[in-house]
Image 1 (cartoon, rainbow, N blue to C red):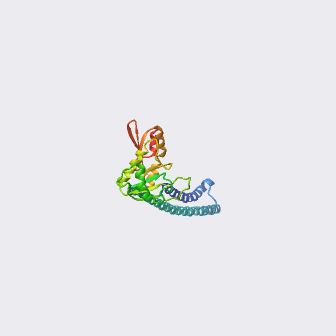
Image 2: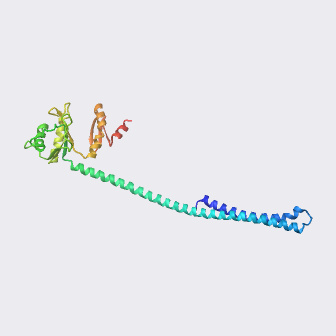
Image 3: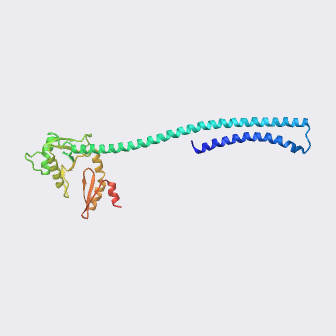
Length: 287
């Protein structure tokens, strides 16, 4: 029970006791003071009787008032005890809820950690499934018309990049545009998704594209700039794209850099290599 409420109940009992005691004392003091008020002379019996009747009436009125106050105090004390019981019960329930909330919070944090780990594993599995894929940007819409995207790219890739093959073709499993509405004539063409039959062929094509595009002149086909990229999951691509502004600054500063899997920036400055896990981490390093 809260200390303040206990103190109020105790104080109520004290007031009740004091009221009863005051009533008795008032009656006794009135009777005892009668001889002193009349001096040494003996009071007339009739007068004494009148005084005693008046004193009795006063005592009766005081007793009635005290009884009413006593009943009120008893009623309040009962109500306070009921309220104390309810408050104690509420405090116990709140404490139980707080304990349950702490346990639920701990479980939620654990589940969030497990969910993040699972999401990272799923993303890694998806990226591993795309290891033999590349994205080709810049190929105009319709260049693959006729023979189809698969046959066109099997012959076009080695010819365009100068990759040596046994039959003049690179074996592909699938090739198609990204699943988006066909753009207009002045809009950027949709990327071409290519899946190789052999992982080595995919690596050979990417290496040839890097070598061909490492000079001052970009790769061009039909007056359109062509770019080759490793295919990644949507989440990994979003994270890697977050470094675009950083890469632009590094190119302007002439600093060598590379993007590591899945989305980490590696720069070499003054012969020292540094790796950054996010664009914010890189910006913080600049001070």
